Length: 114
Length: 113
Image (cartoon, rainbow over all chains, first blue to last red):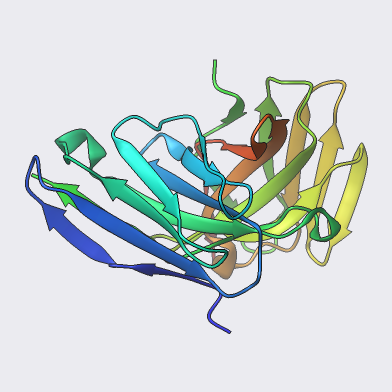
């Protein structure tokens, strides 16, 4: 039972390159989230998916796209990376209401865009 | 205005003391609140959740919620050096697409042996 896994752990991109961050959970949760964390800014929601087949924008969606491939997997894509997207990215899955809406976070992807 | 605000600290307390962490939120529609602990270079891990006014205790941790004042706090009793971390406050809102969470910027706590 791995919980939430993310790949890759580290990535360096050049401006304009694209990449996809992968996230998978084995807790059978319906809802999944992508956050970015920057110094002094806290965690900010990029996109979320309340259930398989649905996605919605969060607080900072510009420059990103997401795909909820199936119930387990939720990927985040940067089509044309910019230095402002240098950040630590966390994926989370959320327990149902009966479990108080707790979120479980993956280990994070540390992305640097030069 | 930020949805969830925390004093960034740093907060230092001696070992064995009570650490008090505070958080305010802007939207009265917030439905539940969470405290996460984050060690440097690691991902956040949940400590406690609270959704009713009053106190909720779990071991050395007590969460307090005052919806009238839009205020959430976390007390850590008998603080240990292993409690040294950044503590994140989060609030849950039900939006059109589902449940969204807003996080504060975190309070850095150091427990001095």
